[in-house]
Structure formats: structure tokens, C-alpha cells
Image 1 (cartoon, rainbow, N blue to C red):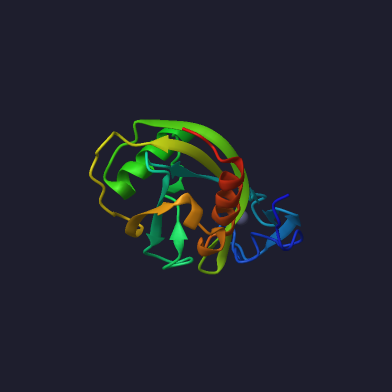
Image 2 (cartoon, protein in one colour; image 1 turned 120 degrees about the vertical axis):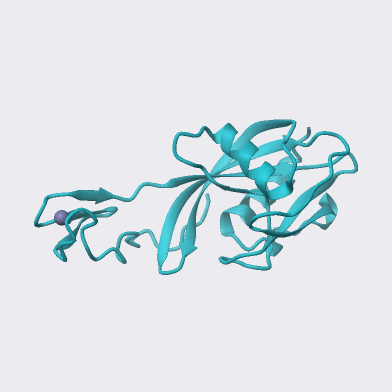
Length: 183
Ligand SMILES: [Zn+2]
């Protein structure tokens, strides 16, 4: 099973004031919630959805990105990102790959999901990372954009999960290599 370090961790610990009325009496009310003692508003921490794509070319090479930004800046990553409000997972993976690679995928097929914790400054955001097997139009030119510093193709035999800085991505790469998922 996917390892999560500290099950007792409270995601809303950094949120000290009620986001509705500004009261400082914004108290822990459950393992994933805080409730305002003044206005009664209760905030629950749910997981944010995120997507990432596995793209393998005809030569059996995996498309990998080098992260341009924190967290895990400079480490390897898969193309992807957070799902916007009012968007499906399928739309999100298509949009994120288009934004980051400069190329719209020809197809995206859902594979599996993994829970993760995304560190964003002092805040830790729980995420559900959803992984897709994607293909690109043949011969399409690629260009690194957005959160991506560089794009490269790695032979699957040279792909090492430990080189991927985000934990769920590393776990997903390990699982993908084990599954030897075909096109
Ligand atoms: Zn309040």
C-alpha cells in the first residue's frame, strides 16, 4: 500500500483564522476539520484531484519532464497538474499536457490513482493523483512550457523511480514499469 508517513497529521493546522468572519476562535473539530466558535462555519479538508500522463514513444522511451518550480525543483516528473473546478479528469490531463508540452494528446486512457501530500509553503495539500496512459500525434513537435524546465525521452530500462521528486509520482512510475503497460 502507498506509504503515508503520519496518519495523525492535521492538514488545517496552519489555518488559524476563520475564513468567513476572521475570528481567531477557529478550533480543531475533527481529524480533517476546523469549526469557528463565533460564526459556526466548519471547514473540511478534502483531497484535491491531480492528473499526470505516461507517454511512451514507438522506440519504447518514456517522456519525462524536469521540474522548473518547487516543490522538488530540478527532479524528474511526469507532465500533469491540478484539476480545475468544473473540469473532468480527462479534460484536465488533456489541458495540462497541452500547456506543458505545447502539444495536445491524441488519446488519454485512465490507469490508476494514488494518494499524495503536496507541500506548498507551510501548507500540505492532500491530493488524489490520477494517472493516464497518453499518446501524442505522430511527429508532433514538443516544447517545455509552464512548470516544466526541460522535456526528454528516457528508455524504459533507464527510468529510475527514485529520480522522481514527488512521492506519488515515484510510486506511480514504479507501478507503471512493473505493469509494463502497453499502448
Ligand atoms: Zn467564523
